[in-house]
Image 1 (cartoon, helix red, strand yellow):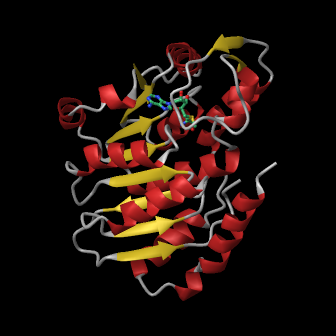
Image 2 (cartoon, rainbow, N blue to C red):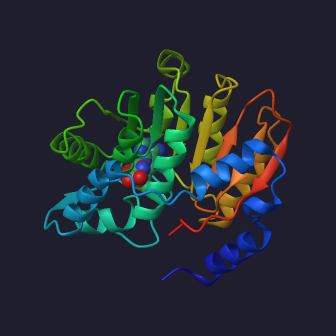
Length: 265
Ligand SMILES: C[S@@+](CC[C@H](N)C(=O)[O-])C[C@H]1O[C@@H](n2cnc3c(N)ncnc32)[C@H](O)[C@@H]1O
């Protein structure tokens, strides 16, 4: 059950959000009508959906090292894989939205912070079959399970890097990878979110896109999102409730959009 404060945050978002008819920017209008509101049934998303379905009936339990912002739902070190899939694995509708966004921006290299069981990584791979997808997971047992899941689905070119974001995200790592898209879906706390944003933003170019997951998950995450919006290097932000999209395009004037999206849950 979502908390009352989360429900209130959702209604506050709905109240602020606009539909395609209120958008004057042709770029935003196209993004809204062709990507956000797109109802095409892409067959590629069946792979991550199938993986999630399979994991939801898993009987396996694994020993988990919790490095993230904690979970509202699962406590303790031994966790059922089916619970991880249910609470941390990407849901179908936000997964499809992520798939459409990633396909639209079409980056050649994507970095995902937070692999969990690999469901989200497979949405990225489904959207960009020939791109380089690198995903970081700090819990060793989750990372090996993700590798197994990803290779069983036949996407073994998705690279799972095992380690804490704080130690993996060095300047050398970021420079050599040169990601054109970063999906932040690991630590849902303000301090680390801003820290990882700062490490990656210096190398962002005009074509780089950042996607932050769960920007309204908590008051802390909303504060982090406000700080990111206020950063002078950022040109355009798009609040889709479940995701916050950040663009650095020099040709665009600084603006913050809140777009109505029905695919957050
Ligand atoms: C919400 S889950 C990721 C879900 C996944 N992106 C998906 O869409 O299916 C977050 C994951 O990030 C990992 N994580 C959290 N904080 C981390 C950190 N500081 N370093 C490395 N991994 C971390 C957790 O172990 C967890 O598996």
